[in-house]
Length: 479
Image 1 (cartoon, helix red, strand yellow):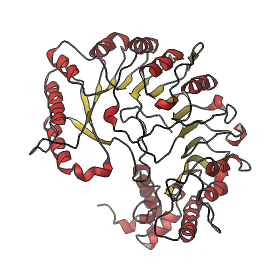
Image 2 (spheres, helix red, strand yellow):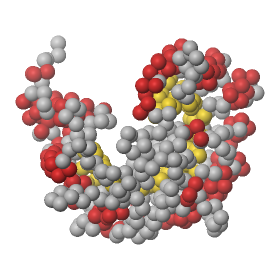
Image 3 (cartoon, one colour):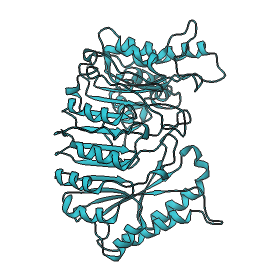
Image 4 (tube, helix red, strand yellow):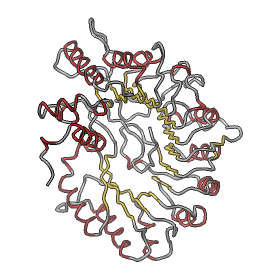
């Protein structure tokens, strides 16, 4: 019989707590009811173990945005003290910080100014710059972010940097500030909805040691020709994600020559037009590519149902031919069936495929006139769940029809690979109460057909930001 919890050694308890921290994605968030805060409040012995285990505290996530109805100075002081206490408990461990601060008013892009107040994000980063290994900052614009370029001694341990300014930002610093930086993400963060605003981000070539960057994510931060020309300075790239809005998709500038990314394994492209895809796929060569994700970029706040449109077929087939090791492909846009038919010869090692639901594709698979590559072992199908339903029916007829069509194919031997995942996109989890009955009915239909079902918030947003991120069908890059 296992010993009671109170009889476990401190080493055993610490090991259990560390495993919980590893498995819980919400662990780093500073909340009284979860993570190390909860464990340290159970009893005196657990608290002693928790406080003496730096591995429970080296990750820290918090939103310092002002709360309505509370004195700004008071809440800032309290939060700063709490954050410093948390980080101090990490001992000498390298830190992973994910910090957010937005202005009190969405219309105010500058930093919050208050007599006697200290910017808690700036203070926390400056005090611990020598220990930070992973840093993510969501701050209101150029003035608020510029401090990271002026910290004496820089960030000697920093390997991953993610910044999301809510206003135009020039990333202009010395490469000596981030000597070990390998993963860089720069994305817009703006609460405006319904607009795809121009982000004139000027990425200076001397800002970081570009030859050391292995993972790069740029989301609506520069014009398309600028992005393409930058890539020739980043030869060690292994993972690349480019999201370009309509305002940045200048396809009139002719690109000279080609850029070969010899080490690139994962490429995620979200572009607004046929011509933008043609320019990028023609200009870039990636012979070692393993995973390719293509989607049409949407405006901020736009419903993903707008993600439609074609893709240059000749350029796509050329990419497949030049990437003999490609094993994963995601096409989150309209895809003619002859492209799927061509995968058998052009992507002979394809093992995972992600597609949007298309009735013509399903019909041809059912009729036997179209087959997936024999190498395929995993298929993900994206289905949009509309809130509107026929009267008296718990599931929208279009969604139900899609599930039924896929279920029939599953019964036909050889029509689908052994692993099948149905990805259900809802409009937003903020409106989850609209979907309760529908979600249960959809889940039951999928279980009857032995189909795995994954629910995804199409906007990937919070109530504060409503930020659109990468396509839910995209293969992730490590940040």
